[in-house]
Image (cartoon, rainbow, N blue to C red; front, side, top):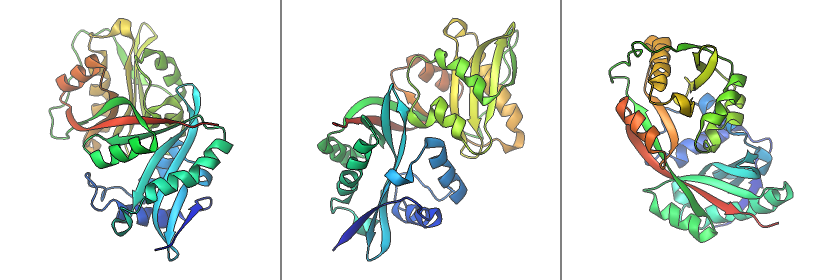
Amino acid sequence: MTYEFKFLSGVDTHLLYQTFLSAFSDYVQDVSHVTETNFVNRFTRGGVDYAASVGVYFQGELVGFTIIALDNYKGTSAAFDAMTGLVKAHRGKGLAKAIFEHALPKLREKGVENFYLEVIQENEPAVRAYEKTGFSIEREMDAFGLSADAPRLEPPAGLNVEIRPIQRADLQQADQFFDWQPSWENSLASIQRVPDEVICLGAFQEEKLVGALAHHPASTWLLSLAVDPASRRQKVGTALLAELQARLGEKFNTIKVVNVDHADEGMLRFLEQTGFEVLINQYEMKLAIEA
């Protein structure tokens, strides 16, 4: 079989979406609920550069791709594998590695220093394949879900905190509350790029911001939840989540919290206590790109 590799500048995103559905039809997680709009908007949020992304074609048909985002991450010029997929009939032929090798010169040209990706821990073949390519595990991250059937959270009684809407730009003030670097798609830069609605709430004590939340209803992702270390264990996070549920009302579905650093025992405990359940465990992996 002869394959052709092309950068995806000007790609028909509808075609890309159809290839995604085919490539992920047997994925460990069901993707049938992902609409074409959500698919494209997720790449917008992540800062995808289609000119740096690569498609693999067989007999003129798109059968696989690696969608690559570019941004400053962890203090360096970086790239992120927003999604890699191959139609089942074309797997096991070394195409994922070949796609990456096709992209590498372009990434060097753009001054990229580090390449990041995320992989589900139980997908051991993929983890081993990435390690053979030179990637190493940076950290473990967990994803959680709060079911729509879970009991609604009640605003904590006697809490001297006002919860009110804030602007996306106000989230910058809460960036210092994190004990760890948010993942690529949950970064402040990514939240600013979301093309559709984001619900942003702030928790204030005497007009001082002590906590913030950002939720993307279209994907059900809780993009950000951070509380000032000096105000933790005072139910500020619970108050923010309770207000979010109230504002969502009948539109409330599962709320997903994606990519929580596994080393943050306090956050893991908080999510468990508020009714969240573990969905998946992931690795963040990194490859240093030599100039």
